[in-house]
Length: 121
Image (tube, rainbow, N blue to C red; front, top):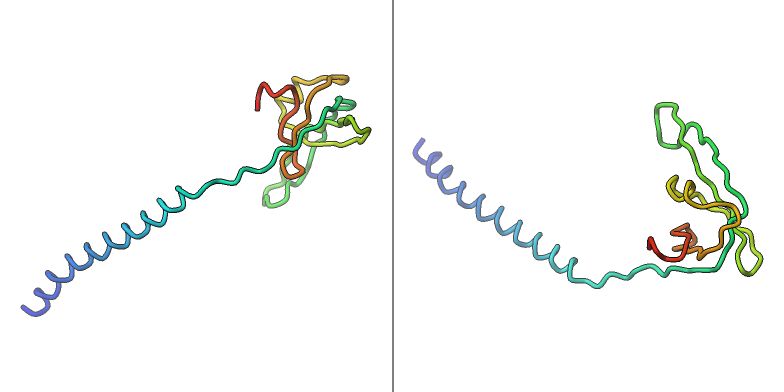
């Protein structure tokens, strides 16, 4: 019985020290990751004009068990090189912009980022 008690008494500090060393190693790795430079994605921009706005209801959103829906706010732009592109935009931007509006269309990796004159970027 004494041997069991001695082993228990000795194992507690060993576990605490082991846990401390493990946390120290994890924190060191996280600190090294935080000090790595971040590569920001390139923002592509082009002058464009809003030519169309529409709202669509997307039903049965993928990955949802419950049948549900969401509104998708779409805006079609005519770029300065006469290409027509369409993107889903946030509702706040959809409400703010109007057909015929000219501005700078910004995309990141081919995905919509912003439209306007850079005041919100």
